[in-house]
Image (tube, rainbow, N blue to C red; front, top):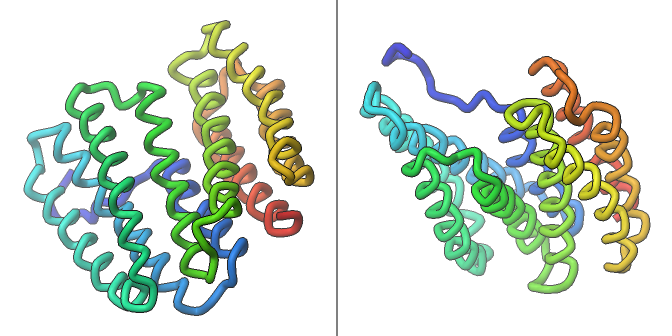
Length: 241
């Protein structure tokens, strides 16, 4: 990596998780133009966390990584000024954000970023973006906020299970079974929560998992599937939620 290079994350999953929960929360509340500023702040917090975590893993280019983390962080803080001035309650999200990020930092230091607990905390952290967008759009600390966080968490945990079966855990029959069982069970969650139509966005992940779990899938194809899954999830959710 040359020092002049801009540092940006390359994982498809990260881009999906930073945007889909936020859009979900926004449409669950009342979308407004100032959501753009809140999303910019959320996006640049994500961008700031990436080089920061990378700097914890490596010594080479650490100064360059921390520089970009600081640049992104400053942009995020600047974009947050107006949203916080109109909705100071957004500050409360800082508590779980820091707690979950601390777990991610611990796993990075332990060189265990691929641990399922780390994935769980990262996905929950991203899902908080949906809760913040919902609150900012006139929502409250209510059951709808829990549904926003819960449905996003369930969807992306399913994606994490599936990705493990086609890459790091390919050939592991226990992981394949776990992924398939998980995708079957989550179909019942929307019904028990009073959102029966929210079963629909989970049908595509179910089919994808039963067809491809444990098989060799090229990273490009996996990325395309992830994009298709995220788009159908947010579009169907927007229609039925």
